[in-house]
Length: 267
Image (tube, rainbow, N blue to C red):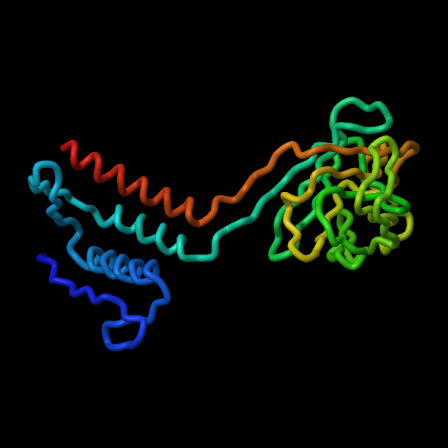
């Protein structure tokens, strides 16, 4: 099937007609024309040829497949979506004041929305996070308050709360921490520790990559009974995993298209 000629109209910033679009910048205008061009290409048959003028003005016929154009269209759609900025940062609790070798657990902090991060504390076998009288402290961000905490859970128990909050608190051998949340309450009687603790923190401009160190109060036994000994474990970031932004996704689509065209040129 032969493609029909597609008419392109330059966007107009002052009026809006049948084939005109209001734009606020040259980039907006270029994008509209580019998108109309992609739609035109996809409206053609399964494969067709386009003449390009290249070195020595010789025309080279390049077969463009719909699948390649689809990749580009998807990448373009992602590019105009809000840029992704989520990050996840993990702290390996490999330093403690009890002389225990190895890691007792992991603290993972991840972006969960505007001004909000999720905190997930997962203890390794043989250890648990202390709840009653326990401490959970952080360095790095600013503006945290006791009211910043929401959704506090310990294993299967939800609706919990920190009873106390301190700033610039010294914690064992690990020095001063800017924000110290202490003494979890609200769980059933007899439950004084947990293998997994999760909660949300919300503050103006808060992101996961602001956190530089953490410390938690831990028990030397798994489960809800804590055990005889308790200590403090801390760690610095062991990994930072950024989510690729939409521009990176668009770049992937463009690379795929470029590779297909390069192969056709070789043929």
